Structures are given as structure tokens and as C-alpha cells.
Image 1 (spheres, rainbow over the protein chains, first blue to last red):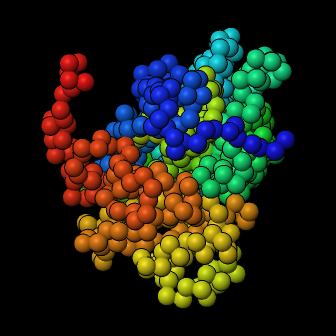
Image 2: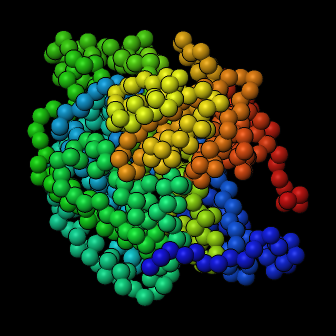
Image 3: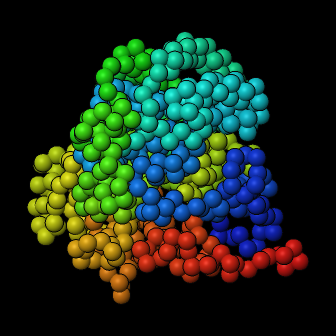
Length: 407
Length: 165
């Protein structure tokens, strides 16, 4: 079916149309999930224009990034996209490691891949679940949230924190994965497909859901590229771009998985791409957990990038020197005076960090390329011509995380 | 991550661009006057159709830096997955750069954010306003001469009472 937008009236005659009214949507509204504001211009129930007003959650993350060192800043990246904080941790430290020129050991790569994919499932569960909730399907939301709890338990076992994990470090991770983590992930891989089947059965042929989402918020392939959309939003419009395949990082080249795309470009396609991606993520997790390599999880202590454990500090001279070098305030990482950009395929799209190093162990500039920010710029275009009730469907399908949007 | 042929074509077209390489990334410094034209040429002739990001770096305290601001245009090719970074340097009295919104709609908010944080003016931008900070904010907070804790702008905000709103 070719993509056509609903015809809107000519905006030039706004002044003499008295029935055009303005509605303030948010900043506090259940369907905005956090604080973002939309000023909608309505003609009856039809949205003829939308003006997003953002910045309510702006907390200067990029400015803070110029004052915290490469390991400290990971706590701030947790707070960006808080649906999948661990994916942000990985994105940040992969960017730092690219700047520093470190290659992490295979076990670390595998663990990071597993947690990235778990984070993707967790993010997509919340996105699809909350989209269902916003357009009236409460049970669907509970199904999704039940499984997110299980993912939180896995993260708790791994990092000690359920929500703000701060799990990765330069050249490794905070703690090695325990056998219980492996067991928990296996259990999740066993049990999750049943939930996914339930979720699909609830929605895929649900008349109400399809009527609310099909043909709503249309985005063609050319527009998706022109508006810099990435991730599931772009893939639902037919852009076959997935950084896991196109620019393989971590352990992704080792695994067999597919890139999920759709051609619809509407809310239903975006929802469906997310559901399909969860199945592919599960495939990756299954392959990774069964082939988890043994060996060290941090880079060799002699490279002076990862903090050694206590045994290494007390019993080896390299460990002691590394510990000294990394903790003294006038020492630290060996950072080139260079700039680098590295992006990963985060659940929401391309999440990249542009880091400028100036020789010290604090970034000179730590720019985050937030997918939510880019996708929210699409919103006025997507909603034009649709009804007021479609606002929540479009918002839900874009998965706007205000903390990442405003940073 | 860029094919040698593509780079050769670019260098043949823009011979004065300084091209450098770091960990597989190709960067090209383009004079400000040519920036728009070069970006358009990259998009139309070499297929760099995705504008990944626009950002800016303030080199005020950077050792050995010759310019104050450096704009960064990250481009990608969705067909061949090549990437190129275009750098444009801007100095203090005239902070105007031609907006690339006519080329990529996605540049709209990115340029607004750069204006909001660094005060770079994008000539020809359709909606040149602050985006994250309030309109009445007077400073550009990501500049290096702006302190981390601010200059007390928050204390000067007008309090809106129910009667006045």
C-alpha cells in the first residue's frame, strides 16, 4: 500500500477560522510518561499543527561530562535512557575505549553483548507495553512489566543495582558474571518466548489495536533518512540500517540473527518491528550465553586502564603500579589529544558519543547523540492530520524518553 | 570505514580540505564558506544521505588550538555504511554558518541545540530559537568560559503567580 498522509486544510487561513483551538498537552500527562510538552492546534478533533516544547528535564549531562572522569561519567549515562541504562553504559565505554585504543577480552565482549540485548528487550517491553497501555490495553502492559522484573533481577545479580547499573568500566566491567547470572539468563531465555507469544496473540490481530495504529503516523523511507531517524523507527519505514550488522562491534559478528524491518512506516509497523526484534535479541542471548568464553573479564593490568582487583594489587607488582597510576590524581589514563565518535545500536536507535580527549582523564567534550531527541523532532510531521487520540499512539510508537531527550 | 575511492573523489573535488584519519574515522576540515556546498556535494554525489549528528566543540582551553569553535557534521551513507566527519572552524567575531536544514530536515533540532549551547548562528534556519533552555536565558552554557554551576540564572527567574498567569 503506498504511503499517503491524510489531507489537512490550508494553514494560511488560520486567522479567520474561529473553531481552531489550542490544547496544551503535558508537561504532566500520563501519556507523556515523563515531562514533555506539546502545544497542539486542533480543528475539532483533528490535529493541524503540533509544537513540541522540550527542555523540562535538561540537567546539563554534557557539561557534567566535562568534569567527571571516564569511569565516573558512567553513572550519568545511566540516567539518560533509563529504560535500558546498561546499554548506555556500554555505549559510553565503547566510545572511550575507541578513543584510548583498547580492545577488551572476549569474555567481556560476550557479557556486554548479552546485557545489551537484555536491555533491548527491557526497553522494547516497556515501549510496546506502555503504547498498549496508552491506547487502552492494560493487561498487555502487565504482561510486559512482569518480564521486565525478571530482567531487573538479572541485572541485580550482575551489578548489584536494579535500575542504575553503572556496570561497565574502561577496559572491562565492574564484576565478572557469576554462575547464577548464567542460570538466570538461561531461565529467562526459556520462559520469555511464552510471554512474547501471549503478547503477540493479544495484539497482532486485535481489531481495536490495528484500527488505532495502522496508517497512523506515516513516515516514508526517504523522510526517515532525511529526518535522521535510526533504529526501529527507521527500520519500520524500510531503512535496512542496523549498526550491529553494518558496523559490527562487540561480539555481534559471531552470532546469527536477522535485522527486522517493515515497510509500513506507521505506528503498527514500529510496534511490530519492536516485537520482532525481541525475538532476534533472544536468539543472540541464547547463542552468547551458551558460548560464553572463559578467561579474564578486564584487560591485562599492564595496560593500565582497568582497575585491578585486590589480589592483584597486593600480590603483583603490575597490579600495584596500575592501581597507583589510576588512582593518583596527577596520573590516570593515557588519552590521546584526539576526537572520536563511536555509536552502538541502542534499543531506540543509534546512540553515539563524540568524545574529545585532551590528554587528561576527563573528557574535554562528551557529546551524546540521543536517538529520542532526533525522533521527537519527527513528531509534528507524524501527527499532522490525525486525531487527538492518535497523539498517544504516535508518542508511544516513537518511544520518547524525556531524560534522554533533554539530557 | 570509508572506501579509498570515495575519499579520492572527495579530495579531487575539494583539494584544499585537510583530511586526517584516526582509528578508522576520516575527518575533513572544510573552510566555512565551502561547508554548505561540500555537504550538499557529499549528499548528492557520494550518497552520504544520513546526517547522523551536528555538534560543536569549544576549544577555548584546548592546548594548541587555533580556532575557538569547531563544528562537527557526522555523515553516513545508508547504502554502503561509509562514514565521514566534516569539520568547520568558526571564530569569535562572526559566528555565522549557513544552515543545512534545506539539505536535511533532521538538522533542524540539532542546529537549534548547537545554537542553544554554543551560540553559533545558523543563517537561514527556519526556526532559530533556543530549544532546551528557556528563551530568556542569556548565556551559552556549554562554552568553556561558562562555569559548571552556572552564573545564578536560576535565581533571577520570574516567579509566575496564579493571578499574573
